[in-house]
Image 1 (cartoon, rainbow, N blue to C red):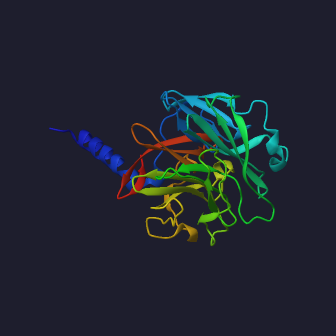
Image 2 (cartoon, rainbow, N blue to C red):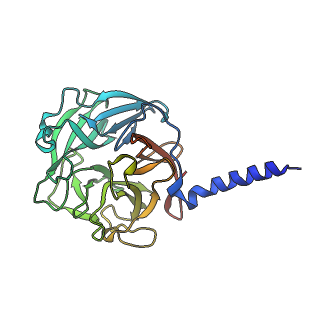
Image 3 (cartoon, helix red, strand yellow):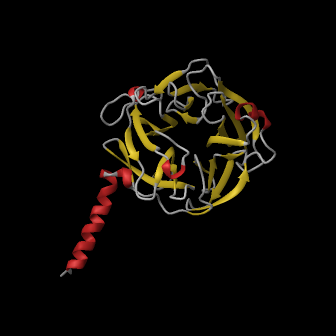
Length: 318
């Protein structure tokens, strides 16, 4: 016969197993170790089964891992600097929100050059045969915005749709999130069409960091709502919507269009996890993996990793 303690323990374990699906906002990140300081992370799994992370840092930071748990800094993508970006950064070496992926036998790195509060911004592309520091070749400017633009060219993400077409999402604040078509042969912009896919007109435009991931019949648009980059005072939240088309319309779980501020909340501040946001997703052998950063109470930015499953067509983290 089970003791009262055993019954209570099993009950708590059962509740813990159920809770993430009902209250994803309060699920803690998975265990990581090593060099865990990071901001705006994105991860690609290499053909050999190891991992490369790119993140916001001077000249774009890179980390590697063999097991998705222990991470090691390996240095900047551009150890000799990236002088082609300084017009947009006001001379700063800090390059933002890279997006790393693997296609056509090489690694693609899209990244942003900007300064806080400015829409004088640009997204550049580099490619590499190995993904290692110093191996990246600058392929040039993909798209830029200026002081008169009502959008901001930061936070890029490459998505290849079910038909093999290449697209890049980007954007922050102002009129919201955009998507443009890319040439799969070059990785550069292929036409002049600029499509809008998400905005928060009633909330001061506070959304950014788009990432589209395809799962089954849907494209899922991941976003950050509210404010980043203020340590433990950050109000970032991780949101998601979905569409059967890569160009939208994207709606949240309640059917609200993401162009009208829609978004289903997945993660928010809880306990000692502050401002979880800037989401990215990649598919691994065991599950889709949600990648993000959050702040510790001392303000340090940390890697956040959670596995996901889908219930009734919607992602839940655990």
